Image 1 (cartoon, helix red, strand yellow):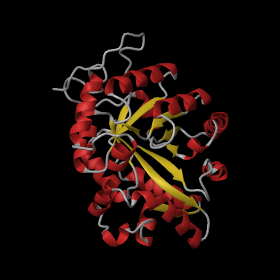
Image 2 (cartoon, helix red, strand yellow):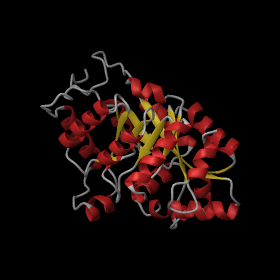
Image 3 (tube, helix red, strand yellow):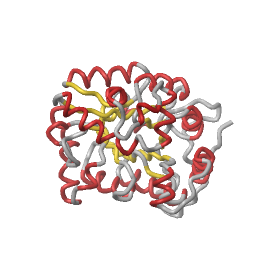
Image 4 (cartoon, rainbow, N blue to C red):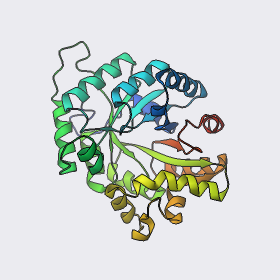
Length: 310
C-alpha cells in the first residue's frame, strides 16, 4: 500500500492518478533549453513571453552551472501566463529535500498549477567538482530524497500543495523508482527505442521525452552542431551506460560522438522530419515531447522556435 504522504499521487489501492497539470501536457510539445541562462533577466522574460504566445505548452529548464533551478523557474512563470514551466532537471545535490519540497509548493501555488518539479541525480563531475558532495549510490540517494520530501513540514499557507514531480530516468531501476515514488520520468538523449522500453517500465506513469533538433541546414552544419552538443555528454558515464543498452559502443563515445550517435540522438531535417520523430515518440509511449533546438551558437534559437511553432 502506498504512503498517505501529502505529495502522493496514488490512491490507496495502488492505482496511479495523474495530476491535472500533467494531463494538460499529454500529447503536447514543449521547448527544452539551456540558452536562457546566457540572457539577462529582462531578455529571459521577453523570450519566455514570446514562447508563451507562440503556443508551446511547456518550457523545460535545466540546472548545471547556470541559474538556480527554482529561481529560474520562478522568473519563467512570472513572464508567462499559460505555459507550464518544468525543471529539467533540478539536482538533488543542490538543495535539501525540505527546501526542494517547500520551494516547489510555493511555485505551484504562485503559478496556479503551472509548475512541474523535475529531479535528477546529476553526474559525478557536477556533484563532486562543482558542488563538493560525494556521488555515491545515486538510486538510494534519490529514493531517500523523495521520502524526505514526502515528510517535509511547512508552516505556511502553501503546506499540503500537491506538486507534480518527474525523475530524470534512463536505466530500468530509476524508471521503476519514477513509477513507484513520483509521477513519472523525464528522459534525455534517448532514441524512440528507449521510449518504448521506458513505457513498459513506467506502466501508466507520465513520460516526458527530450528530443534534440537541428532544423534545416546542410549535413556538414548538422554534424557541427550535433558534435558540439554531444561533446560534454560523451564524457559522462551515465549517458554512455544508457547508450550501451541501446546498442552503441566505445567507438561511438569519442568526444562529440560518432556520426551514428549524432544521427540517433539529434533529428536533422525540415518540419516534417521533426513532426515525424515527435509522432514516433508519442506512438511508442511518450506522453509529452520537449524539443531542444540546437542553434548556430549559444544564443536562443528564436527563429527556429518560431518556425517549429507552426
